[in-house]
Length: 76
Image (tube, rainbow, N blue to C red; front, side, top):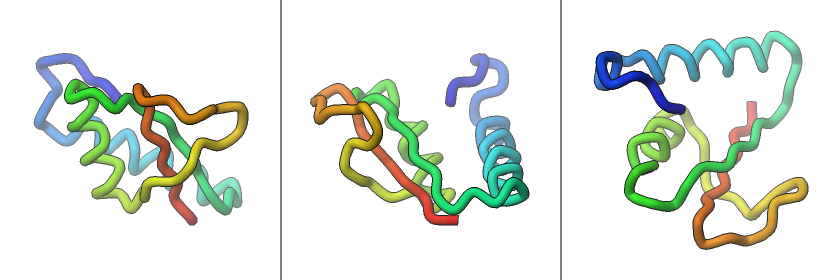
């Protein structure tokens, strides 16, 4: 989740993620998964996901354990 510099800190990413979560629920999805970076550059994104209820999980799908990635899930 990345926004332009002008939009950062204004809740744009949170609103986008809230919209995606609402759409997933509307469609009847039961669980969501995401992968993001492990570097400091991605810390704000990881905090955003945590605020929306995502928790750390093991790699999923075709992902394999990788020191550059972090994996998250959210039960809807």
